[in-house]
Image (cartoon, rainbow over all chains, first blue to last red):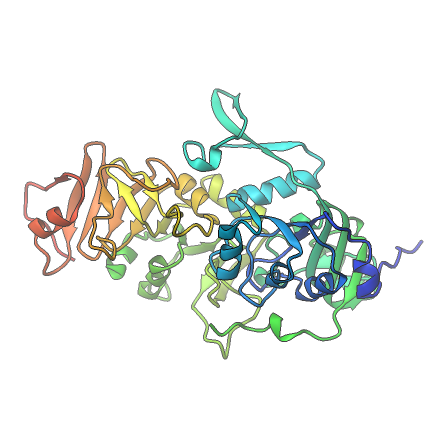
Length: 230
Length: 210
């Protein structure tokens, strides 16, 4: 037996994204942000997107390109502090922003990827982040119901992939990528290196390839991946 | 004040240093001091900061600064990172503040109409770290006290702050309100009282300086 080959071109990978889709995008700052897939989505042009991403990168970088091109209707995130452009769009009402506590965003995505309906959490109880959320009592304490998140598409950056889509990440580029790679109907991965089957030892796989649909190898890394000199 | 705050870290602790002033605390820890520094974006065992020339593009802290690892460091995803926070593995967090109330309420993420970038991981840190201390200027830029009877701004978490380090004093949040523990060298008790927006419990003996 031989595991299937999921490698394809950037265009083939991005092709099926439609107007109105919900798109999860990995990354925390630059590390783990799939800069090339984001550029491809700008070129593709799908509009009215809901993005789920930890942060909005910085002006002129990462998902800011999607904000600049007006393709984003809604952003589910945790922090926009490094992107004044995103804050401007939010304040003017050009995009709708839903803030989540960072670990709760992670758990909502993990729950979506694990086939669950929601998680219960006491984070934010007694603050405005709890406003409008359903409260349930469990083991004598109140918890907020945090609905699971799933997406139509996830855009993932990995350090290494094999042909089947087994993934390995490096450094702090892991962040939301392994969670989002489990939580979308279609999972598209850009990898800095695509290796033969067995090229990532089974013990070293972070994301099992079973969750992955498309693997695209990055020929070169654009300067957006480089160290940011602020 | 940053050097004084660094003495709050006991050997063996797991510690998260918030963005801004708290990040500088690491500069006051000896290189062989036994401590595990955690950052929300997926690292335990933060090493010294890196300059742009030697930085690893895949190795940042939650504030986006380039950092390094130490022998024994571990990387993990964001769910694991906040499992560490919410499950009580974090012995101490040091956070910045816009306002702290006399009951330990913390406001540090939103100024309605002016500043609302989102709280990131700050809510979980404030609510779930075993000990929460604040590093902040004693007054805001307009000269208003940041330590108040009650917070006016949206809260990050209720009743979470145990100690506050400012440029003027070290102040504890006690069941009876703010208590003066130490003053900065050259600052009088009367000055601290004037700069604090709620009653301050004073020690019976002389106030130590830092």
